[in-house]
Amino acid sequence: MKKIVYTIAVLLGLNANAQEINTISLRVPEFARPLVEDLAREYHESHSQVEFQFISAKTQDAQNILTLTTDEQAVNFARYAVLPVAVQGSEAAKLTSSRRLNARKLRSLFFVNDNEEEQTKAEQKVHIYTGNSQLSASRVYASYLNEEVTDYKGKKISGDDTYLTAAISRDPLGVTVNYLSNIFDLESRTPASSLTVLPLDLDKQGRQVLDAANLDAIISLLEEQTYDEIPVGTVGFSYDQTNRLINDFVCWVLTAGADQMHRYGLLALK
Image 1: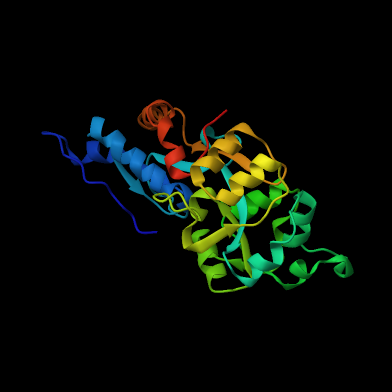
Image 2 (image 1 turned 30 degrees about the horizontal axis):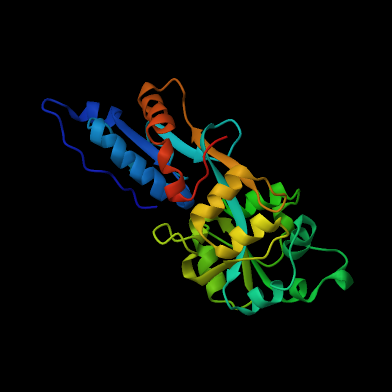
């Protein structure tokens, strides 16, 4: 991943060593990167002595590393949601449109089923695409449904989960799961790349909200309701909590930055 460094004003008399100490290195999955970029930019406006750089997951020699993670031990600042999707009007969307998918049916659709004779036409024909990165929505989805990542059907796509959207857009039978921020256009608040959420076995309100396909309405729904068919979990910061520089930034995010979560497809903490 190309390293991006925000340009900041250099205070008079600040030497090179001091600048290095005041650099926070960010490891961020793509689904949360637009949010973190905005938070870093806003934080810099009132803390001009701090600069940020984005580093890859493999980078080990950076100082003051702050990693975004879904681990339970992290300092949580928001929640995410994962939904199953296909391309609107595709053969995969048509095959899955006639049935409301509950948790059991979702397991059967996405994961290997020993009894092939009981598989539906949709389960037999669709092509499942999953990610293999450590923070992939596919891992979250498997864990939530008490399945193993290795038991997914279909093809595994290397790299960030944004490649999953590209993969199903080229395959009329393609189906995948992804985070809200990768499914929806954050400006229009409507599905990106003509995606459509697979029909889920929810209550009347839930079905109406998903059918309307508005990001803000879905966020509001999932902040109020819990569904067995929709994984919701926490995302947070992992870092050396004795590091004062990073602690100050994290504390600021938990207060001043909290109102930006919805804008970037994330749910507020309960």
